[in-house]
Length: 380
Image (cartoon, rainbow, N blue to C red):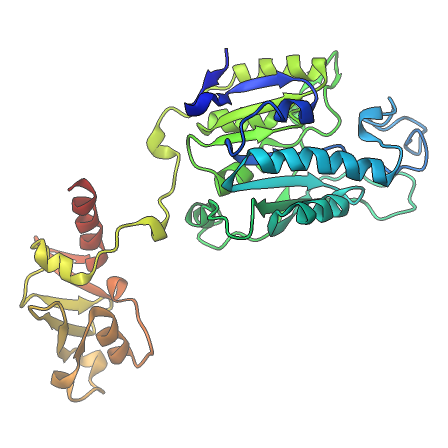
C-alpha cells in the first residue's frame, strides 16, 4: 500500500500508466528530485539493427515503437508535456536529472531551458564496456549524457559536496563518471532474456541520489522501467514514486523494489557538510575550558611554540633549533591562523591543523578540541 506524507502526497508507490497523465494527479511542488530516462527517439535509418553475423541487437529487434516518434516535432511536443509536468511537481529548491544519448539529449536540453529549468551540470557517463558499432560506419557510442538542472535560477538546491568529495578519495568529484553498463546478476531477466534493453546500473543512480538528495526526500522517476531508481532510493532511505506504462515492467519493478532492504543504521546515511556545521571560533575553546590562557601550543612539526592569551590570540614564545633563522619572536603574535602564517612566511595557514596542545600526557591537534566543542554546542 502506498504511504503518504503531509498534504496527502503519495510516496513509495509504483503507478501504472502514462507518465504525463500520472504526474497531473500529483500535487504541485511535492517532490525533491526527479530522475528521468525518457525514450531516446532512436534515429536508426533502418527497422532492425544487426551484428556482422546478421543476429539482431537486443532492444531493437522488436521495433521498439515506444522509443520512436514520427518526427522531431512530435518528440519535442512529448518532451515539453512531461517536462512541464515535472517542473510543476518539483519543489522550488528541487533538481532534475535527465539522461539521454545523441539521439535526444540536445533536444531535451533545449526544451528544459525553454521551460525555465536552470542547468547546473552536464555529466558524461563513460561506459567501461560499451556496445560496439557493428556496422563499422560510426564511432562506438561509449557514453551517455546526464543533464542536472535546478527548478529555477534562484533555487537553493541540495548538493552534498562533502559526501561526493569523500566518495572520490577526498578530491572534488568531476563531471565525467566512468561506470560499466548494467550486466551480470544486476541485469534483470525475463524468460531467459534481458527484461529491459536500457536498464541503468545501480551505481549510476547511487551517485545521482547521493549527490542531490537527503534521507527522507521524495525521488520521482516518470519512466520507471524495471525500478532501478526505486530500488536505490529505498536502500538509501529516500522515498520514491515510480511511473511506468508497460505492465510487464511494472510487475518486474514491483518485485524488485519489494525485495530491497533499506540501510538499517541511519547514522551511515550522510556525510555532514562542512558548510552546515556550527562555526566554532578558537575563543570558544577557552570559554568551554578546553584551552586555558597560558597554555602552550606547538606546531605539528614541533618547530614553533606559542602561548595563549586571555582573548584567544597567540604570542610566539620561541622557536626550536630548526627555526633558529627567525629573530624577534617575542614580537610575533596574532590569531591561530595569522601567527602560523607569519611563522611560515605565507599569506595564510589553517591554524586548526597547524597547532597542537598537550592534554593528559598526550599531544593532540587543537582541531580535535574544536570537534568536541562543536558537539557540546550541538547538544546544548
